[in-house]
Image (tube, rainbow, N blue to C red; front, top):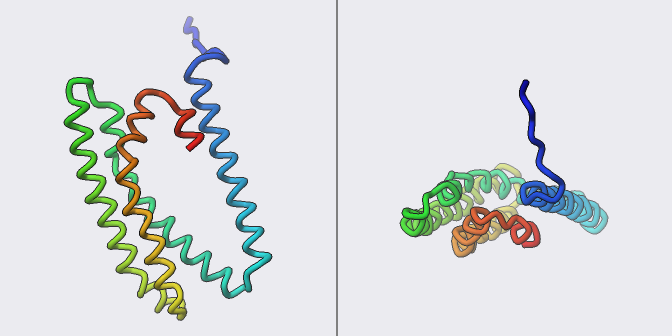
Length: 154
């Protein structure tokens, strides 16, 4: 007979899952509030332009999931420093490339939708990729240590 051992309510695993769940709920609620607020204050055209810019940014952001952080999390203690140094450099290459990609496609998006304002919005939103490498290695080291509360609060 197989006995399943369920995590206890006070276990670290359950607390970490709880923190990540709360983070997801707060994130979704804030997005919903933002959408409702923007819909009330922007014209339908401006709201559509903002939605296109945000969607473009989200589609490019998917490309940040390269597995670099997972290599930090699973690295042995003996190789951790080397993996972190490599991850630091690779994050700059990936994020710099994503910034360049988003800046390069911004005129195309503006042309497709017939609004030149989109080019600036999409290009400027790509600037976040130039800030991400500063914190990614630290973020994955925090996850490696199992401190999801820190990630959730951030």
